Image (cartoon, rainbow, N blue to C red; front, side, top):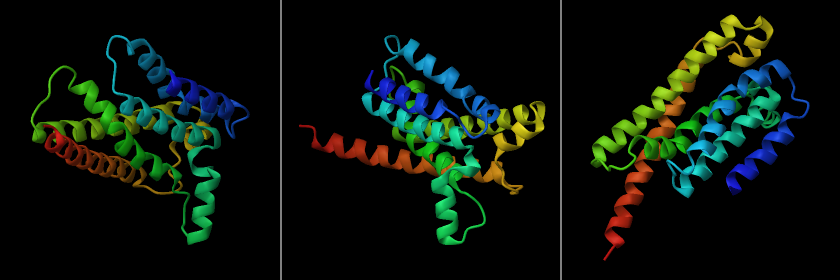
Amino acid sequence: MLCLAVFGVVWCALAIAPSDRADWLLENGPVFLVVPFLVWSYRRYRLSDRAYVQATLFLMLHAIGAHYTYSEVPVGDWVRDAFGLTRNHYDRVVHFAFGLLMLRPIREIGFRGREPGPVARVYFSVAGVALWSLVYEVVEWAVASIADPAAGTAYLGTQGDQWDAEKDMALALLGGIIAAAYDEWADRGAARSRP
């Protein structure tokens, strides 16, 4: 409930006067599906507190990107200017964060009630992150090609990079691999400390 309340406050604050209302609506499509699903499934398919906290952190990063449009988030502009970069990389950070933060919820949903061996756990958890990253990129492309061209361009946020979708998916995959490696290391440490 605390995660839902915190996210609700952040989301409502960022829903006020976004940079581009059409883009904001497109970006919040997944939020309009995921948050009600998590609320509905709370009693039926409860995840760990850690999974809810990580999902909340990711959704807050996403809400910031939706408010400003990903290519215009001020902290990304500051980093771009400070380091002489050619683009605002906030979207890349969020794609990496998707893999890093959402691996745990994906893992818990995927392995509900059964615990596979470590190889299967890592393989299928990382594959789940890669799958959802791919689905997001495909939906993003489809919506942008159907939507108003101006809103579609803001929604895609490629910033002139023809390989934007592939780089975004690679970063989500890298985040997922790091999260899976950490989870396995933490699980082994916990198993060794049990009497």
